[in-house]
Structure formats: C-alpha cells, structure tokens
Image (cartoon, rainbow, N blue to C red; front, side, top):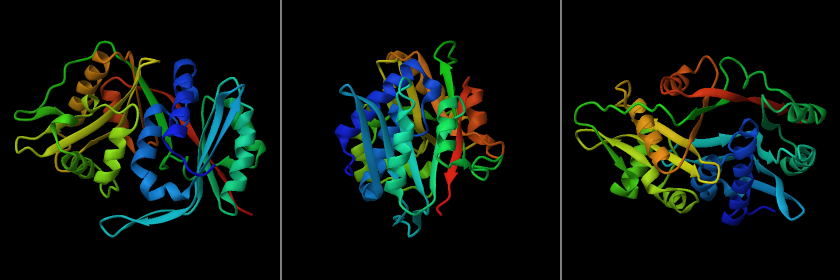
Length: 312
C-alpha cells in the first residue's frame, strides 16, 4: 500500500486515540492525532511520492501501522532544499499487540531497501526497545546525545490556568479572522526556512480534527501576525495537543509564546479538553522551547530513544 490518503490517515488517528486514552506514554513520535494530521497534510503534496505505508488489522480492527519516509531531496520556494539521506519510520502498535512491531520492522526493511534506517521508540516502551534491538537496531548516539535532535513529550492538566497577558497593543486572533495567505505568512515568520504553502495549508484546514477556532494567533500593533499555534482536539479522550507553536523571529523574548499557550489552553478547556500535550526537543543543548513549556506548567512523561540500523 503506497498511497496514504485521508481514509488511511483517519484509521491511523483512530489508533492514536485509543493509545492516548489508555497508554499515552506509548505514543510514538509523529503518531499522535495532531502530529499525524499536521505532518500528512502539510507534506503530502511535496513528499507523498517518497512515502510507503502498511496497516495491520486484527479481528477487523486496526492494531498497528507503519509509515516509512524514504530518502528525498525536494526544493523549497526560497531556493534551498529539504533533504533526508536515510529512511525514517513512524509507527504505532496497540498496547495489547506489541509483538506486531516485529512485523512492522520486517516490512520496513523491505520498503527502505539498501539505505540506513531510522526510527524511534519511547523510553517507557520496554517491549519495543527489546524488539528493535533483536532486529539489529542500535541507539543512535548522535541523535540521542545532549546536542541531538531527540524529542520529549510533555503533558499538563488543564487546571489552575493563569490568564494570559499580552504587551500593550497586541491582541489575540483566530485563524477565521485572517486570510489563508496571512496564516501561512505567520507560520513562515516563525519557522525559517519553512515549506508550508497556501495549498498545503488549505489541506491542513480540511484534515480532521483541525478547527479554525482552535488556531490562535497574536497580532502586533502594526497588524503583523507575531505568533501562531494550532490546537488539535481529540474529544474522545478529552486531550488537546499543540502542534506547531511559534513566534515570529522579530517578536521573540516579549512573552508572546507564554501568552499564546495560556490563551490556547483556555480555548482547549472551553472546547472540552481536560489535558494538554506538546512535544519539543529534549536535549540539554536546546533549552528554549522546553523552558517555555515548563514555564506554563508542562512536564515531561516520555522521550524518544532514537534508533539506527546501518545499511550493510
């Protein structure tokens, strides 16, 4: 199965909902409801031809899935390139069927071919750690180092929420208040270089469970969109997730990130969520986002353990 479309994505998100409700510490990187929606919707046009996927069903219900990202090199609009020289696996198995990871890894070997293979397992997932080791994977010392790219997952109950405070002249907006072009411009201002296009953002807007009222922004006194975040609400588990969160590079260190998160958490709670999740770089050398999230009450509950299998 090579074409990963909305139907398959929704099945994968359904498994994410089950894991979120029962064993959130076993949620894998990019395998949450919100991460799946965001990664797929913004990148399917540019990267979809480099993707492979497979779904595993038990008694008619999805029990596991694998999503392989093969090596790629594609241009950005500014003349630079997005590039990956190794394959990368995003995956999830139901907590009751951890043994299916072995089948996912066999499939991944075939799908990736003769290139280095990357994946992550969670620090809380002892079973997965044993299975990947038995399949020839080793801890990726570079990605998992104190200067590496590993990610930690943070949570916060939506109680005792302080009110957000904005600098004078700044104001909160929602995505429904701005054009698609301006929403994309806000994203590009926060992440440079960024590959999000208006076409890709239109797809994000059509992807469950995106809601324009849960896409808060901050406008500066001159109407520049200075900060942006998207909140993905899973009503079944009453869990909401920030992905992404960013402040325009010209407006940082003014408390906008803190205000946006607090405002976003108030929105999520009003929409029915009782818990908030957010992922961030966890390495000591990358403290900025982690410190920001800690400052509004998030605490880590699991982290990636990056794994690598070098091609022979």
